[in-house]
Length: 177
Image (cartoon, rainbow, N blue to C red; front, top):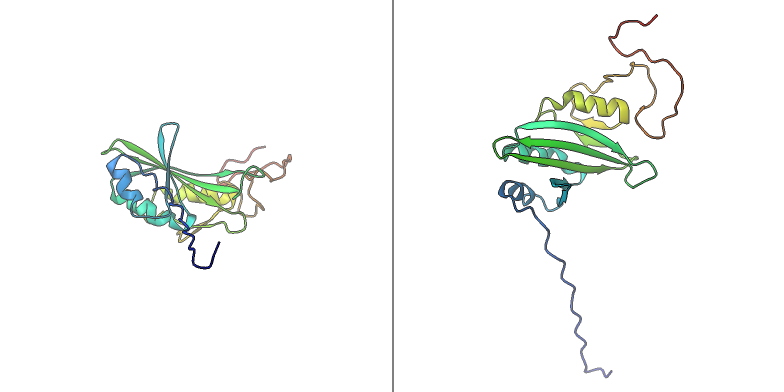
């Protein structure tokens, strides 16, 4: 090759982001560049960074998702990284739609924004996720244990939590004799 020959380098084009066909879901997804949409067992799923949870939940509520049906955590101990995944299921009765939000949460940074300000019913779900998995919900009005005794150490639904035969007296339950 001589000095006067120019080699053209073509940049590879990134494929366009896949968005849902349903207009309500598309409108929510288009507000955020970092949302990935997939269809899982016939259900619409948004995979998003944990820092966007509150904003996406607010956008979904504004779009007509009236009900937070569930909030839970999955522990992929040794199976996947990041280890945890926050899962929120939303329901829109006016649009007859369900939407699942999944936000990966690394074990060394378990803080996620609370959605109690958007859906007050998330209060107990977030307390349960805190109590049993150890996720910390920033902005939660009363992030205290809900099932385990206050002095309990650890988070018993983590897959690396030791199994034992320690009797547990749950809060506000009658005394077993």
